[in-house]
Structures are given as C-alpha cells and as structure tokens.
Image 1: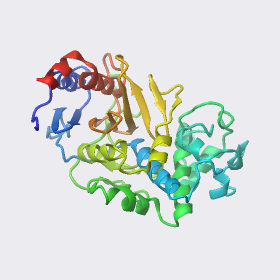
Image 2: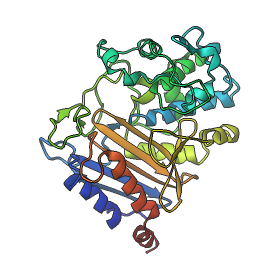
Image 3: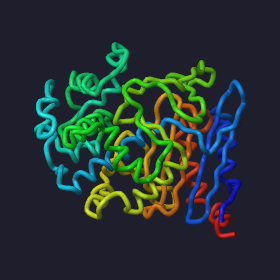
Length: 362
C-alpha cells in the first residue's frame, strides 16, 4: 500500500517548521514495509515559490560518514584492513606534531570518534586562508592543534577523523574514494542521484532545492544567503555527499538490513560508545548513531548538516521502517532553536506518538 499524503502528526510538524520555525522548506519521506508516503511544507526556492519534490537532491553533510564507514568496514571484512591497525600503518607520518601521533590511534578510534584529534572545522580562521581544501590541507589544519584528549579515553566528534578515513581507504585500495563509493555502494544499490563531488565542484547536478544559510547567526532577522553553489572540498569524506530522500531510504534499508556488510562488521558498526556534547540521547558506533526516543524506542541512522542543508535519516534496527527528512536551511527558530529539534519531533511523531501509531494501524 502507498499513501500519497503524510499522516496528520508528521504533516503538522512539517507545517510548524515553516510557520513557527521559519525554515524555507522541509520534506519528509517514510517507508514502512509496503507503506510509503512523502510530505512537504514551504518551498524549494524562496524567489519562485516552487515546491519541494521527491526527486530533489540535497547535500547530506555527515551522513557521508556512514557511506565512508561502510566502505572501510567492507575492506575490514575482506581482511584488507584491521580495525585495530594503527593509523600510522596506513598513513605513515601523516598524524604527527603538537602531540598528535598516528602510531597511538587505531582505525576504530577514527570511526567512532574516540581518537581525540582536533576537529579542523573548529578552526574557521585557518580554513578561510584557503580558496579550496585538499585532505592534506585539512589534516594540517587539525594537527596545528594538540589533541583534545588521549586516544581511547573520551569521545569527541571530529571531522578530522573521517578525512583520515577517506585517505586511508585510498591508501589501502589504490583507488579514489569516489571510485570505491561508486563501485561498492552507489552502483550496486542503483543510487543514481547520489554522488561525492569531485574536488571543489560547487554544483548540484539534477533537480534540487535551493540551499539557504544564515552563516551561524541564530537571530530570527539574520540575513539569508544562498549557499546552493558551494565548494564542499572543506568537507570531503566527512560531509560532502549529495543524495535524495529516496536514495537515502534505499541505502539505510540495505545497510541496516545487513545487505552491505558481513555479520562481524555489521556488529562492529552497531557497537556504540556514549556521546558527549553532541546530540542528546545518542550513542555512536562506526559511522552510525543511535537515538533513543522518550518512550525508550531506539532508532539507528545518522544526521548531517552543513551550510544551507540539514538532513536526518533514522529507522528501526532491521531497516524495515525508516524516516528521511531534509530542511533546505541551517536554522529553525521558535521552540526548536535548530533543525535537530524539528527532526526529533518528526521521529517522535512517526515512531513514538500514540496518534501516529493509531494512524499506522488504521
């Protein structure tokens, strides 16, 4: 059965995100067995008022990490890489200086953010010195800073970890990260609208919404800038990919359902550590996170954010019931403060509310 309109609880969140949260546009798509629906509110383009559509592509931010971690774990399953290998083994003399030591950090610690490496995106001044950003530049920015903690003793979200994972995949395979993503995930799953941009390519090919940013200014009257054309070389393997709601559904259904990883690596991906100073009620595995709703229901997936686009993709452990949502902006005002609050309300409406449960049963 396919539903053409969203359940009332979820449509209400979408509408309020626009009317109360001030976001330009939002979309959400749910797949639950044979049940499927797609809903929107607001617009894809504030100049023309055109609506958001299911085929619209958008930047997925840190959901890129889930794709990249899946490739790494496939290599582990093929006995090419061991998760307990040191980073130095694969990237000799890359992680060094200011107390950073690749010989004291494992591949696993990159994947689960327990490496302690400084998050290069926190040094905006250094990033601004470059017109474009190679992985080598990004890690050099990171290693100009000392570690934030000794590897394995704490947790801290760091994009530096996944820039290194991307470099490590290329070192282990002799192929580009783009090629490995395409060969191992994108082509087998027919994710025809999913890509990792090459270098500093600022475009989004195919149909897409405009992407809007307030450049970290949280005030409701802050100036809005169009960030649709964006050099994402500063995000790379940590957050540069583009996709659609439908493609993300197909990816997470396959990943959570055990179609992309062998059982041993699947178990490793789902082994979480507690997060700190991140999203509330979450754990982090290897490129995958868990979120626990107020009722105690645990969902699995990942969120992603960068200039002008915030995305959530979470579902049940078996991948049979997944919600994907995207806001074509990087703010949400009112009671939410940021898009994470909107996404949390969507997850509650779909997976946790008595009303949505009754609607699904009807």
